[in-house]
Amino acid sequence: MAPAAFTSLLLPAAASASAAASRLPSAAAGAAASFVRLPHHPTGWGGASVSAAPRTARRRAPGIAYATAATDKSIYDYTVKDIDGKDVPLKKFKNKVLLIVNVASQCGLTTANYTELSHIYEKYKTQGFEILAFPCNQFGAQEPGSNSQIKQFACTRFKAEFPIFDKVDVNGPNTAPIYKFLKSSAGGFLGDLVKWNFEKFLVDKNGKVVERYPPTTSPFQIEKDIQKLIAA
Image (cartoon, rainbow, N blue to C red; front, side):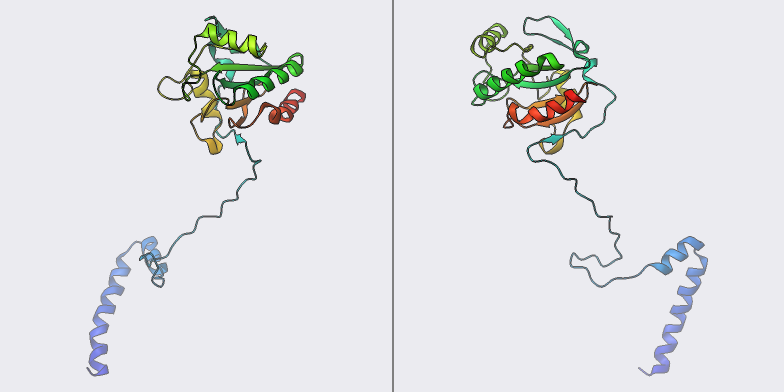
């Protein structure tokens, strides 16, 4: 086709496009004018893209799941039952550092944890520190006994003097309210679920969860964190 004829075909189309653009609202026309077509993208989309600002990863100490969710509540808003079935308002522990643990009598972690928990409790109980133990049978059915059997086991075999409470569920539809609070206050790599026996939550003097530790973190490994909160 001759160049002149080709040009004559393009001119009406260009004029129509120009007329259409003139009828657009100014913002839309500006957006249409500023849109840039990029080379073909490997994923098949060739339009302009918007990149999110790079996220800066926070450095975390290994083995600890940190508190991630803010809540107006504190642990003092809850009442639980002790191992004898009596109501215990947790506000009785105000201004104390608390280590909350889901315990079991027949777990491979039982002996080491109960031994170290008893040692740490004896060392810091006069300095404003308490351990709150909640028996749970959800992991391998390793806490099958009655409350009286659990109490006798802990107090006789390990000389546990820290408070032991009523057996509870820590996951699932029957999760105890105190554990709903603990899990909503601390997530980290562990997510919502308690993973196994002897997972630990460290609570400051204001009733707020400040640290969460996986079951394999021993009480002795937490001792420095306990010392810092006691001194705060």
